Length: 416
Ligand code: HEM
Image 1 (tube, rainbow, N blue to C red):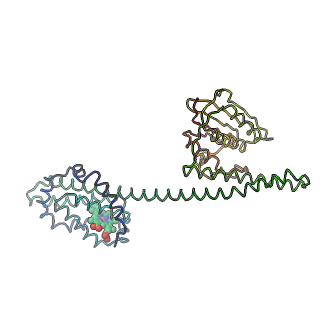
Image 2: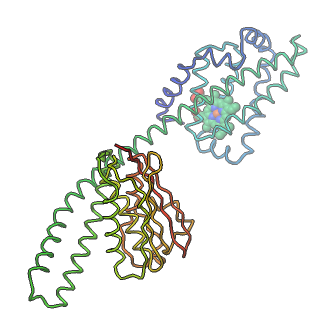
Image 3: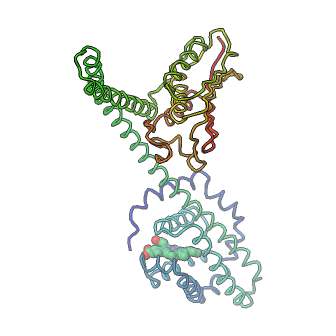
């Protein structure tokens, strides 16, 4: 049966071999000219027993269901016996040169292609060694050679073959991984381009929906209260949709590396005062205490990406307000070395431990039965995490169901 398309994998594996050289493999196996000589001397005595070695080998192989299945799917025992005979003959010729190494790598690639795992392939060398050694024990008296010495030589050949099998598998796996990485990169680029175009296309009509509903709401005193309520719902939902589109656009930008860091000089206090006002308006009429602990922040200008810092903190603050119905939301900030450390602590619904690992994934939302109808795009934390990675910062979360969550972010920040 034809083993298709292994040329590329073989090229890859042979490149590994070329880089580190056949000489090196021979040295690693400890195989030298004296070994070749001894193998050539014992060869005529062994040859007559080769069919026995092969029969014993395949009797063992066909007893293992997984291996038997591969053989019946890919080839036949009779065919394998003849290929194995060639393989053994190559050993008995006793020439361990570049051509020998390259052919062994090629044989390894054939086994990789039939999806025989490296463990089984290498494992089978042990069986083959046992059969071969049994024959050597039997024929060495007639040859006048020491069985142990000959076995030592053959053992080094099998070590060489094992090393070359590993070369083949590493080469083929490297190629497979490279192909997969290329495919994943192309898919990510396509996704990012698609999202980018789509987001732009969606933003324009969305802005017009927002603009015109605002005009109708503010400039039409004659509107019936029910009508006004409906329009306000349209406006709120359009705003939510726009927020989602903006998050998608930012994520697409982050994916394609188009999101860049923009360091600016400015004061930290006004940033946090602004966040406090936002937090107050988000909390609205809920019975929530707002605790502010950022009065130790430096009063002099600092250098950081204010736009992204605002986006990150705003996201944490709005999550806290959204998922907390009673108790308190605390906004704490201080400077620790080269980082602005911001903590948003709430006494809200909390996040189960099983979900903590996934909360920074795109479109992940805490179990909707627990979160209730609280909205949210499911992109906020994914985007926050991306922004922090871009800035060279970090995010950490601690949470207990029913007791609340503490989000800690570290944003790089320099004194001017
Ligand atoms: C010590 C371990 C093994 C050695 C030295 C060995 C040797 C060989 C050789 C020399 C070939 C011919 C490659 C060529 O020139 O194209 C081959 C092919 C093959 N081997 Fe093995 N083999 C081993 C283990 C196994 C095992 C455990 C299986 C069972 C699943 C297996 C299945 C195959 C198959 C399906 C082919 C393809 C045969 C074809 O071209 O039709 N091999 N093997």
